[in-house]
Length: 509
Image 1 (cartoon, rainbow, N blue to C red):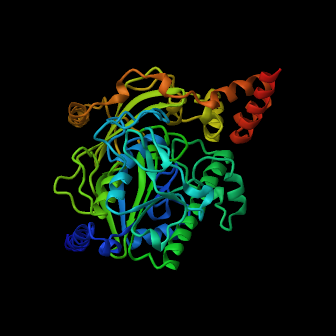
Image 2 (cartoon, helix red, strand yellow):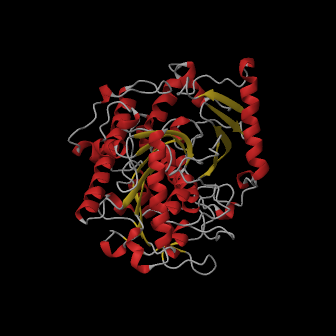
Image 3 (cartoon, helix red, strand yellow):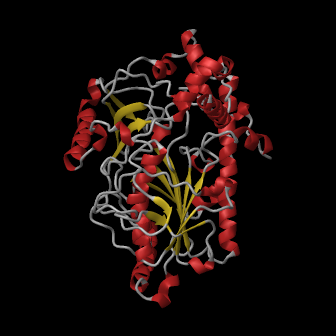
């Protein structure tokens, strides 16, 4: 407790000094720079969180000299809704940003604004991306009307950032948002793995019990860990750039995953691998390091944290809470949601506490294996296990992913049962727990409007291209479908180009 108080006193003093100097140009450099790093599609799969077989020395050091949050959870398990809540500080279902890549032409309703609007008012230069990292890191991907660069008034102008690429001394104080996309499924995985100087040995990985233990699945898991090691090195490059420019000590670094890993029960689902996120905060000038913080933290909370360290008074409408200081009224639960992702609608909700997770599935007549077109290209384990399921070679636990229906309610003890193997919802010994979790669900909905339960306006949700590609492959390239069944990733980007080229030629005839 003494250590926590010491940390808080340092932070409070620093923030107070920042706030006092906000309006004074000569004190502008007192405000800390903010480097916000989002790593795509990963759960707590870092060495410092206990993941087997992976090496992440850079993030290990950031955690050891900063604060490592052990119980950070996403308010959504898909990228664009999650990024929407982090950019606004408001739960995505409240601002109607819950459907993946929807509402891109609809402005945020008043009084909601992106946090970069407040940061600019406080004197910050807002920067998106950095060419130091693969793919330039400039992904925004939020579900409301916006443009990357330009002014913002929410009516006629919708710019979120001032500039693209690297931060400089002239930009201070700056807010830099960088996405590390190597951990996202993509055609680069094989190349990254093959070029790795520490290629993860598939024999060394430890698979969760929901996975069948086959060579293809082990290889796929090992390749995923190779991407994490590459990503860790990219964080090191960003830190080296800060050091070179003399800005490291006055820069607070916030590292988080945007959603869980893209695999079974991960991205797109409300289980641990889809919601449990790595979150590390490091600030040489303001944090005494080495703390493993066990508070419940939601993905939306990074928005409030960013504004507080910048000396900005938090808007009353925010559902986010700053995690820099101890909260006298800490979160009792986190409300998470999964709604529309491409052509698949899931109206599922989760309540996560420090010990339990309750899941309410509003749509039950649909398998977890919904044959979503995009995921057909990027989940080898699903293809392999489908075949094993048909052959009766999966365990009872593994079969549940392929069941035709979902249970309407699920309850897990995530401390004693971290793989969520035993649904306690019908266990009479846990009736009180189940009712308490239902009470949290009702509490959130009594205070907030959940737009994810509204009828969908499909015009605001563009149809996914992947469905057309799958239909084309089934008709024109069935050999590719057969390769996918063997767990071979055929390269979605390449096939998309082929499909578009052929479709263009057909339309010209």
